[in-house]
Image (cartoon, rainbow, N blue to C red; front, top):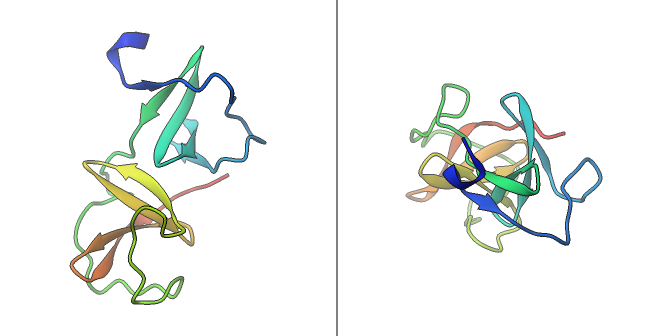
Length: 117
């Protein structure tokens, strides 16, 4: 894939790396960085925009019985909620205590654990 065949993001004043301040996420055979609701993969002179794929490790199904003590049951995920947004399949999840939460009809679906470095 060439630079023009996939979504990219340029931020010339910032270089992603182990001490850049953004959450590093193991994504397959490489490391992405969570930045403003995007997964950035530093690549040459730009960052590729990545999404977590829907897989057995990161399913996208409804899990109404998921119980997580990492936040109050009244907590509502969304922009500014205090949890990092993670693009996943065709939706956005939120990183909560090492796993992905997806808001769904009054509960949080569990969409798998996320390895952060």
